[in-house]
Image 1 (cartoon, rainbow, N blue to C red):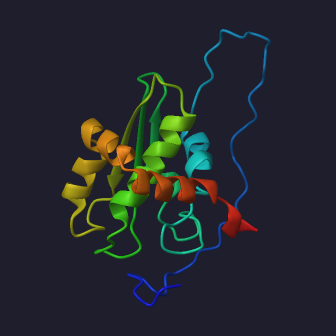
Image 2: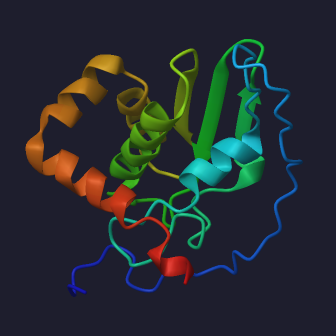
Length: 162
């Protein structure tokens, strides 16, 4: 790891948890809409790799089940994340990774809001504005280098859980 890490010694949390979600029963109805809950959303994003460390966002306590809200009836998902330090320069990239994973994995009917948890980052308003502006997100994803970094965080997801 380079010596210029923003947070060279992050706290790593134990992530062994049992799923609480009951398995969905398939009644053979192909047209039935599958309900989505916070635990399902958490399972989609918990293993995203941190851009700076070889750990997941869950291991670094950046993502927590308790900070995800799903309103399935209104097709809304709200994810809040907590950067490891208040001046984390990776906060926008982390939020972008979460957004991309959900865009690629969730049904199109959902509007997804991603926010830094209030009071956890010195530039939270600016980060939140960037993460929830469609044009800014689209422009970021047109940047070939940035898209490679995002894809790397998503591709290596879960390797730190072994």
